[in-house]
Image (cartoon, rainbow, N blue to C red; front, side, top):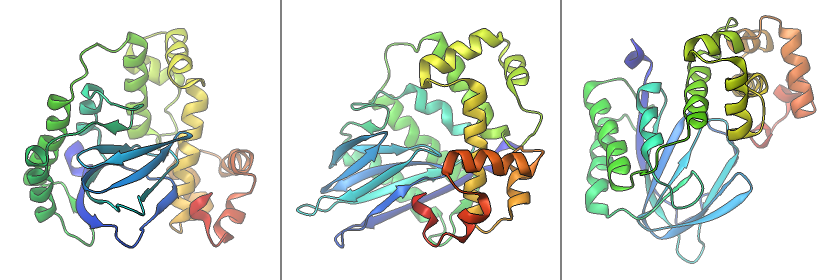
Length: 266
């Protein structure tokens, strides 16, 4: 049951002490809604100013940083989740900047839903799936997709790309997941899959999958998992190959990474 794998968390924070997050990566999807004040969100080489009533989106394994405006520090609330059941809503949202900033939504239309979800969630550890959390989380994403709808349909290449990414994010731990299985699941040719990735992210599907597995392996290492266990948990059948790929990407071996005191910024 996919719902049993779902993690939903919601909270609220006042950043009057210049609370800075990152630079770093997250392993979940997170949407922040700015209640008051303003701040900055750095994503894919661009820094966006986010003001009251706007929202910004964090996707897994994308390097980000965000911090309050020192002259008008923000207060925000957020929803954090994993699980593919909610992801389709992202494809229906129109962004005002890139694919990360959602334009102004009146607080009365969405803030009560955030507050409702926050009252359900355990402030210390979040909450595994419950019907109540599921319904409110879906309602929050539905508000975004209905008030800021994407009117023009996505090109077919983008649809294939989004679908393939969803499969990778849910099945990267399976060593049998590869280009052939992706094509089979999507019922498309290797050439079509390759074209969709090149046009949407500039790299091949094989490179994307390898990069995703390596990123997830790094997150496991950061949380104290052994190199061998991290490799096997991320679909690498050979831990030595994982170490080789990791070193090429980050300039150090997994063991060296584990010894780095401040490895959040790597």
